[in-house]
Length: 190
Image (cartoon, rainbow, N blue to C red; front, side, top):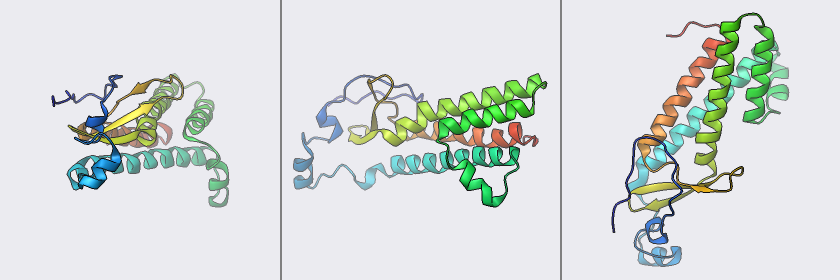
């Protein structure tokens, strides 16, 4: 079987992955289980670790946005969860952006930085978090592969085919998390 080409960039493909690639040499899950060739083997530990790291990093980004919103609104600890937990990630970005744009009205440079950061956060949500969290993860000949169907486009893509691609997305999320404190909190970047 020919190896599926991979690249370091997280470029989604709409190329179909044959069932035998998704389950190794077996063409159905039951046959794979009966033969002992389970696709969820230790061999893909790097992929699972990369997925876990992304999930942890993204949760930190989401909390940093909640924290920034709570700080801007001067919420008490008792108010914090009641107010900030009601927003999904997209709404959280939009509300935080609106609050900080109003807070820094007249400071064009700061407002541009806020707009840019919130747009990148929304992009990470749409192009990384959703495909990672809502994909069907399968074991292909080259390792794990994410099969994702966008709710907006109704088209199948395979956005992540290597742990390196996930690591790059994790780095972008970690950078955005730091930027939330720099842009929204006025802290100096390291």
